[in-house]
Image (cartoon, rainbow, N blue to C red):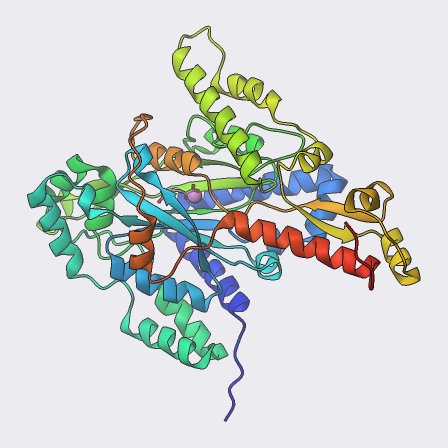
Length: 466
Ligand code: OOG
Ligand code: NI
């Protein structure tokens, strides 16, 4: 009997909704953040018809409301490997390598996400996934203890593994298998209020680095935050304290602009939660662990390597200046950032002509009429200025290492903004992952180039043009 498969997009949608429900139940403060986002989004849509039309075109409010990303931290190569296979069932593939050793964090990361434009449009859910680098634990004895603890755990249920194998062999899952897969996989990301280490081991791991304690002390890689999309991140940041949430000091990423670039994100700081250590039996001896928080994001256009280099330079300047002028009467980080970014053109046309950002090209209504009459011979620029082709910004789908470090830091109660020597090891990461990570720039460039080819082919069915 031929079984019909559900699409990987459908499984991802289902998984996103299930994760959202679980996390709102586990972390009530996160449910409050979602309320703020819902309010800000509906107010923005009501006040701004341009935004309203854009959201409608993107699939309406239910597409808008689905979470955009989450994050987990795994402890050993086998865990990264099996999760890569699990995410593939949902059409999520590793894109980008993030070396967080430069921020003094003992992890390196990738983001599992959909690749194709139509899959991203349906549901762009990404999981930022970090792998612990055991070799970054300086104390040899502790390194061995951590390695031992991790070697004993299995983070994916046996049934989930069977279903992953099924999906790989049969190139998909049936409807009921997909439902079972999502509910089995959810177990991997669930919170465990009972640690699998005793208090003293926890303390030594935490002394080494709080991130190590978070990764090693529990039975699995609990989801540590989810991130919905907000249409006005500055307003949502302002509202957090009014709802009793404690936001991080500043929004990560570029300043507010007319033409948004890359990714702006902020979070409320991680909660101090009760956990029971392995050697504590008495209800009164609950310990504390800080790990889980809620985040919001607002995305802009994807930048080319040239645009990204400019972004990195301006951001580094702003960070340097603000650390030098730390007096009460000095300018705020936000003002310094805004000043620095004056040097980044805030105009789609200029950004496009200077090759700073990626665009998707399509025929305008007039272009379609012309295509039918045939015989055009013009360059892309001429077609744009004649109103036959239009350039639409391509949304950035990835993450930013400096921002990610800021998010990690604010949730590990660490103010260490020092830069450390890079210890990138993408080859090792890919070996552990069992696959290569895709280059985000190459994906955007391919999308842009395909769109140009398609326009030119439609306008010049037989001819060649420059
Ligand atoms: C991941 C932090 C990075 C982001 O949005 O940049 C991240 C973590 O805390 O595990 O999620
Ligand atoms: Ni995040």
